[in-house]
Image (cartoon, rainbow, N blue to C red; front, side, top):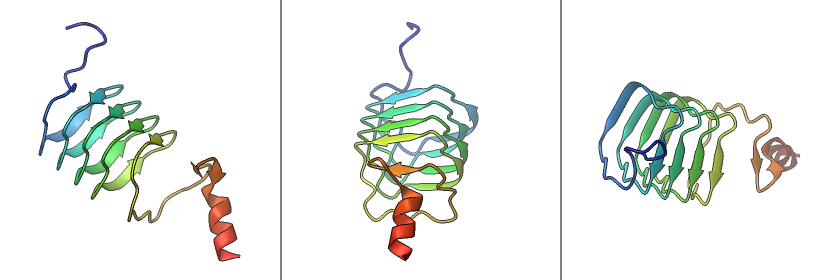
Length: 121
């Protein structure tokens, strides 16, 4: 296997559970991860053209992760570090964010804290 290849390229990995795994820098490209469960270290992981519908990320470190052109419908993220993560080309329709530190978070270049202040004002 070449240095740049990934065991997570184009595979169907539905209902897979990743527990206590160090998946730092992993690349998930075109993978079906419907109903997958992640309890892992995913720092700098990359998810591209990936189906994460109904996936669960619990007690995970996704710092610096990249999510590009993915399906996040029904996803659950709890006890997670998403600092420095990037979401591009994703649907967040009907998403709920609760009990989160939004310091420095932007949506289309606008600070979320400014948006919330304007809404409350």
